[in-house]
Image (cartoon, rainbow, N blue to C red; front, side, top):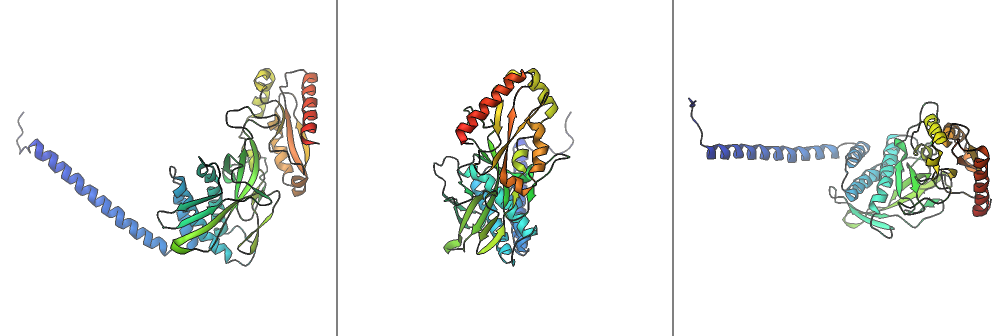
Length: 356
């Protein structure tokens, strides 16, 4: 059927459509550029703490550019660190401390990514492409009560680990990002040594970042420290001493949530599957300054049945200081005499290895 109206030639129709698309694209770019400028000007007028929190929220969305993400986190942390330094003494869970702790935890979590393909990780130079700031981030040397920057293969954010109903969260307020350090003593893919969990040792870590004064061309010196909160409960920054934040329940929570009854049932009827997970297990490396306490589960059970008990015990600072918790895991379908023999063998090996 013939059209009753004017029919535009095909070539002119394509040119017309392309012209409209280019006009729309130009308009979108114009709005984005000048809208962005307006947003930047408005943010510059915001209070420092609010500005830092917004910058940190943007940084946390970066997925494929670890150096730029770290630079944005450092900028936000530096802003709130300046506000914290104006306080007269120890700090509480106020906005600057909350944002600083969040930023330092984020930066600690990025450390393994920044360390990839580096044989030695003592310092990094990172530039923030948005602000032009150049950060010289120092990661060593390790001091008393601190971990080396290369000791952990992973650093998990303790804030993202939740307790279940009836469990205890053992969180100490203070300054620093609370993390869980994951250490494997053998390369990935290798079977773990005796006593070490397949998923690695887990310990509480607190990340602290302190800043030097800005130098020429917006160059800023910064230092990242991975504190062992078991050995240090205060830290000095810019001549002031602060309490160190800590999360002692997070290492245990980081092993995941399991159905203890179902796991115990499977361990009883399919004990052959436990050949690589049975025996004496340490959730963290042996500490000669603490006394081992060994938990042994019963029939149709597993070491995870003790999780709630251990979390409750960790609330006592004297118990945390003096004792270290181990567990003995075994298939409860095996004869008791055989499981007892394995326990005696592991205890004898631990005595010889650690000098108990």
